[in-house]
Amino acid sequence: MAGQLARRLVVPAHRAGGQAQFIDQPVPETDDDNLGPALQWATARLHEPLTVEDLARRARMSPRTFYRRLQEATGTTPLQWLLARRLARAQSLLETTDLPIDRVSEESGLGTAANLRRHFTLQVGVSPSDYRRNFAGAGGRI
View 1: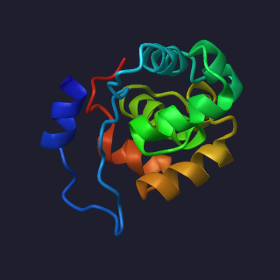
View 2: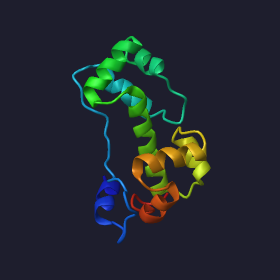
View 3: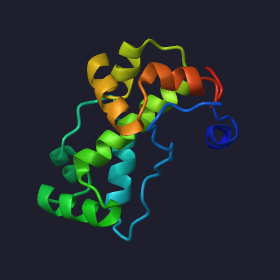
């Protein structure tokens, strides 16, 4: 909550061209009793390798049914949802820690620093280093 407010109040004077807006993505509320808990379970394990089959098993669904229900609830595929959650975790780590980029990529489940840089720049619009420079401390350093 404090990080959300800080992100709204502390905006750099100049934003890099084409930079995407920073929007928090909470776990969607659904009528499905199994989907929400499965997504919360996955969010707590972003640093681990996760597959659609893992998520479907946790939701007590077939992979095909899980894929369809998640797409109905979120408008995105399971792997895109997982990537978005991992990027949000990376953003949080960049804002609140001094961890090296390699560790941020590991802790967020993106594997290598190169993978983090590629996905982060494509989705957020700036490099992880530029993001940290602009938003470090927005959520309170630990």
